[in-house]
Length: 114
Image 1 (cartoon, rainbow, N blue to C red):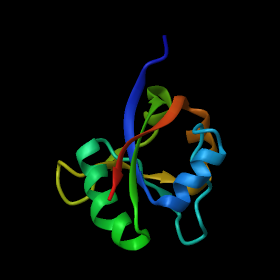
Image 2 (image 1 turned 60 degrees about the vertical axis):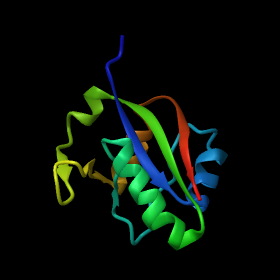
Image 3 (image 1 turned 180 degrees about the vertical axis):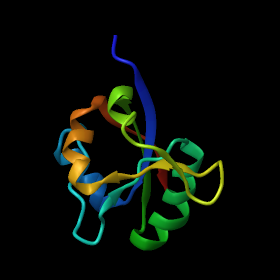
Image 4 (image 1 turned 120 degrees about the vertical axis):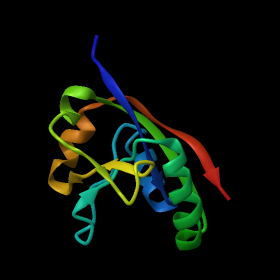
């Protein structure tokens, strides 16, 4: 059995549309000004970003949940973004195709704001 880690990602409506276009099986490539992909380790952290950042920026925010193979994530250190409650992985944009290949199962939407 493949060991996985559950992660979350807050997204706006444009990114969600691209995820849906990929059959809920992949995150879209990063834009040139986005060199890092930031999945987070807690739903609460993802909720705060979706609600407090995505909604003002784009009118809606969504929280996605997904499982990633642990052996893939072992190559990356968990980063703290200000406190122990705000933890995330920093996946370089060029590694996103490999990250998507390491997803186990579909990407799910767990929350929607507003």
